[in-house]
Image (cartoon, rainbow, N blue to C red):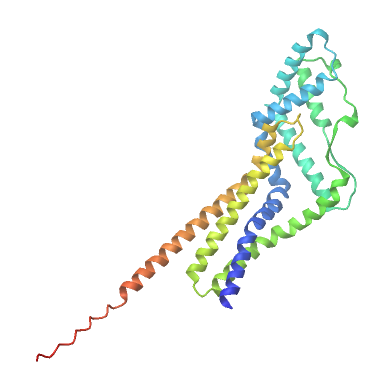
Length: 297
């Protein structure tokens, strides 16, 4: 009974490793506005994100500007000005403000009971950009298009998505707090109940390493699926940079658990192997039994 119960607890602990890691990452990394903004902040200086923003903003401005035969030259100047703006402190401050605003809006919608869509107002970003274009004399102030109010709001979450996402988010918040503790408790309990604890430690370490490897594989597959499902106009390089930034902590923790599990398993196996050799060498060798002497006739 001890062997069966110990094996059951160890198996459950190993199964909970990827689930606990994923839920803890979602709660403490993605679910925290400050950490989310700090994670996204370095991307403002990334070339892929800057290039994607420059292309998107340039296309939006040129769709409202009538440049005539000089459209190619005007587009090049506008893109150069927008790209220059993405390298300024004003852009980085605006980037952080926009990320904080959208994250706060999403969390309020997921933790509350509102049924409306979650939107992000880009009017402050466009206002700063218009000022930058006018200061750089790329476009005069009277030629910068006035974008309607309804075009400055970007829908982040549709109302139809909130009900299902809200349930999943509540589950992740609860699981992120208790699953890691449950994983450790089950592993310790399984080792303490084991008849051969060294073998139990080795099995637990290998099982947790396997769970971490599965989580690392799921992260890679999730990245491929995320980039594949993007619309054609979305930059895959920029989306990949965002995905990598958001999952960096998860990937680091996964590789740490994998390395720790393999190290513990190897150390325990070597210790057990050495103990067996010592025990075998300590056993006294039985003296040979003398052959009976034959009586002579």
